[in-house]
Each structure stands twice: as C-alpha cells, then as structure tokens.
Length: 545
Image (cartoon, rainbow, N blue to C red; front, side):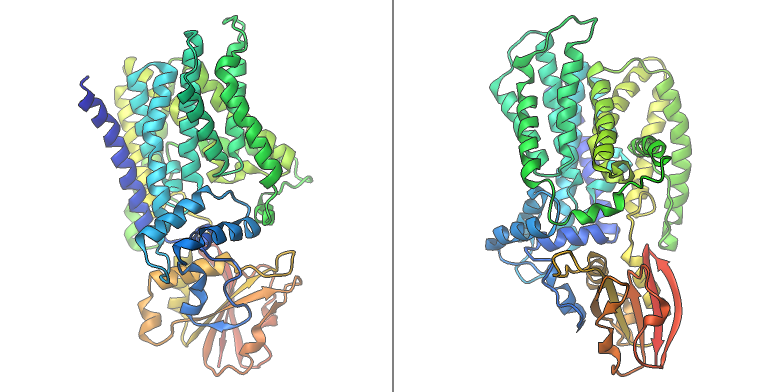
C-alpha cells in the first residue's frame, strides 16, 4: 500500500476519535472531579474561596479564575499539598488554559477538557503500532486503532478534564515499546538506544500522570519474564532487551516512596474495602470484567432531557446487538499474540493485588481501567482480524457500528454517566424554587484544620456560571452561594448568617449526608420541603418566609 494510503488509514480513526471526544466535551456537564482539576489548572488553591460566608456567584468561582503564566510553580505546589495526584496533566492543562484564555477569566469547561481530548486521541495511532509489532498483522493493527477510537470507555475518559486519557495514551506508548523490544529479542537483534530511551520516558511520564501506572510497568516486566521463560521457547531472560522496563520499575518505586501517600489521600476513602464483607472479593473480578466490556459497548442508563431519548434507546439496542456480534467474533477468533495476552492478564491481576495490599477496591472505579483497557482493545483488534479471515467480517462491522452508537451515547451523556451531575441539581433548583435562592454546600474540614473548598459545590457553581439558567436570572433569583464547613458531628457551621436574612428565600443544603432535617436555622419561618437526591447530589430543601 502506498505511504499516503497508510497515513490515511491511521488519520481517519484519529480524526474520528477527536470528533467523538470533542462532541462529549461540548455536550456533557462538568462534574465534581473536573472541578478539582480546574482549580489547579487555573493556578489556584483549594483554600481560595471564603468559607461560612454568603457569596455571589462571581465570588464563589474565584478559585476557577486563571492566574498569570508565572504561577505554574505555585499551582503545582498547591496540587502537592492539597491533592493526591501527580503533576503532569495539571501542568499541561495549565499551559493550555494560558494559551486559550486570558488571566482573570473563569476557565471554560472546554478549555479544561481540551488536553484530555487531544492527548487521549493519540492512543489510537499508538495502539495501532503496538499491535502491529506484537502480531505483525496490519489488519489487526487497524482494527485495534479503530476499536480505541470508538471505545465508549476511552471516549468517556477522553472528554473529561481529568488525567486518565493521558495515562491511557502513555500505557499504549509503553506497550508499543514493549512489543518492539520483544520483537527484537526474538530476532536476537540489539535494542536501539532511542527505543530504550523512549520506553523509559513513556513510563516516567506515566508515573507523573497517575500513581497506578506502576502496575503497567510491573506488567511489562512480568510479560517479558514469562515470555522468556516459557517452556516451549527455551529462551533465557533477556537483560539486553528488558533493562528499560526494570529501570522504569525502579524509578517508579522511588517516586512512590517519595510522593505516593499524598496530602489528600482521604479522597480515595470511598474505595476502602470492608473486612466484614468477604463477598466483595468475588465482586472485584466481575467489576473488572464489566469495565473491560465497556471498552467495546455501553448501554444508555441516564436521561437528563427529552432530546436524549433516542440516544438511550439506540445505545441500549446497540449494546444488545453488539454483545451478540462480540460473541460471534470471539467464537471464530484464533489465539491472540502471547505478548498481548500476558500483558492484559498481568495488568488485571496486579490491579487485584494492589487492591488486596492497599485495602482499596480499585476495580470499583471505572477510570482505573486505563491500566488494562488498552490491552483489552489490542486483543479485540487481533481477535476481530482473525475472525474476519474466518468469515465473520459482517459481525466485526456490526460490532464496530454498535461501539460507535454507544460512544455517541457517551458523548450525549446517557451512557457511562459521571457519579454527579450538577445540571440535574440546578434544573431542580430552577424548577422548584419560588423565591430568591441560597445554595449552601456542606463539607468536612481536612485533618490539618484548614478547610478545602468543596469540589461538589464548586462544580455546581462552575456549571451555573458557564450554562446559565434563564428562569433564575429572569426573576432575579440567581443563587447566592455559601460554603458550609461540617464541624465533624454533622452540624454545619455558618448557617447563623441566615438568621436575620430577609425572606422569602429558598434554602438548598447540598452534600447533605447524615444531616438532620431539623438543624436548619434559628428562625421559625423555615419549612422543610424535602430530602432527596438529584444528579447524585443529596440535598435538603427549605423555604423561609
């Protein structure tokens, strides 16, 4: 095939990947974790919003206003002291925001999401090259790249202002280097210094992106060890080809010893395993299997507006039809390249091992699928190529079309939704409020006593600032926002400011876990209207006259 044709075959899936992720970045509302990214990407601190004070919207979102380009060092210092993530994605997002917006502006959701959209899409050509090195089959490589472009899981990670898309791309880059090294070892050819350096750099950048990338590095070492010692191969451990992975593992270990704990490790408390529930160990492999399945298919489960009904129906139908096609494809597929199989199984086993050692259920977080998701898609591409050669071309095409439909559902927000949806919470406030609105966010103090701004509250304020609600504005009822700090005994502080606030007003207390309905405020004209959840946000609603 001419060189131009080969480039076109690489470019088309890449452009499709960018289009799907960009569409989702434009359509889906921001959520809690993205607000955390935006604070540091703007160059600000989680302590930059006043607490226990009534603030207008402009005052509340000051933590999202861009600082100057000379504040990158300060931003990374804030990240290290207030969060538990490595700095690479945040630094790139900071640079992107400086290029696209001016200091003093509130960072736009698309600006915050653009690094994930573009860098996540680069996984498409990288997985193509990795599968080509591992299998030697151009058709398998093209199908793996197309599967990466259309993957609902990868689209979901690639449209968010988070670091998982970049981590996925770096896993693909490291897998390409691993496959190239193994190919050279089989041919008894020396490992070029450029390939070795690129391999180490990819792994180092991965560790600067997410701590769990160490599992991918360990899987590389295990893969080379098992393949070299396979009885049928009668090969010896190839130090000349494996030293970059061993060096990477050493560097990753040193990095974790120095930075692994994080000042905000309590952010992962929701992953803690309960020793009294032994069945959760049985659920973990099942959860990982479901995550692997979402790499190809994802049904529609969330409806935010009437226009999304077609996406829900289509995503559901595509998932059922895609499952049938997937079974047909796998049923006629030949054995996949051993390197891809071992790397995939090693990555999944290491994630389970990390859960057992740390006491945290990493399988529960869909986005941690970046550790093994690329290997799953590489295996899918290889399986699809061999199934085509056995007369299953139609099933492969149906499966790819179903993946595309499911990814459109992800971009529309009906499939693989985020845990929190501020758009639904604000829609309820907009619909049910009958007077000026006060929105209060309950949060807990951090161990050192200095309160961090609640990311849940900030995500709602960010969405309100960037996606105005006409009914609130038309009646002069744009909310006043107030950050409440929980004193540790489910008694929010700061509500006393409302004791003399002139009525009438609607009071919404959000993040209301464990808060009693009778705590309200010391005034007798506030009536409790309900305790419910909207978009994942638990809340109390009061009306004060």
